Length: 247
Image (tube, rainbow, N blue to C red; front, top):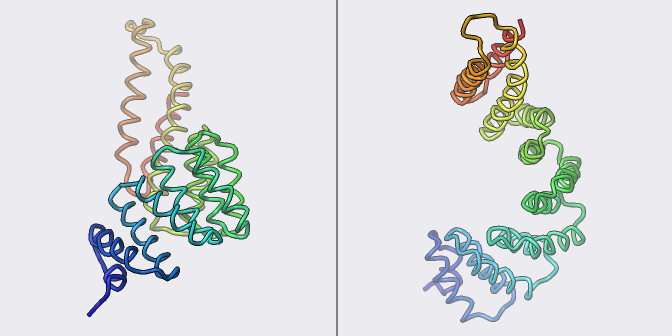
């Protein structure tokens, strides 16, 4: 007959993991069993969006074994979900000190810096992680999102394009590149449209109508941008459409 720890390991649903791992934690005293049970239950609480209990379990895990960077990583992500960013950053700094040779610790700290809107530090950490794992498309996508958030859309597009060269099925990279292309095109279109509207010579070309003209063009182009296919090919034609406003 299976004991509670066996049931904890075999449980499939999050609620079963919580129930059986709770029983195992109460019944066993071996450290290796307790570590696995706390880790499994903590991850189950994450599945249930109960981040406070997840953080408590990861804290218990760290008290059992404070030499595993991954345990600090688990807790910092629970803290991020709770908005406890100072505590998350403390854990991130701890795991960086413990394992400066691992890319994931810089990724995690970069995410925390991103949550704190400390974008330069976030980008620097992702750059360090990418230098360690240059073929990791996910890291490039994450850095691209931070670059885009900081207004560096062209740099972001370069990261999303690099990610797609590594993984042609990276749906998030296609989506984020499409949005960044749209933002670059919209800013370019705003400036071009204002200049073009000033040169329009029609009886209806009063200032209010000039504003309407630009608003209408930008609105239709932005709407078109949101209908791009999965590879964002149509956005290139949208950028070309913006060009005609200069001529």
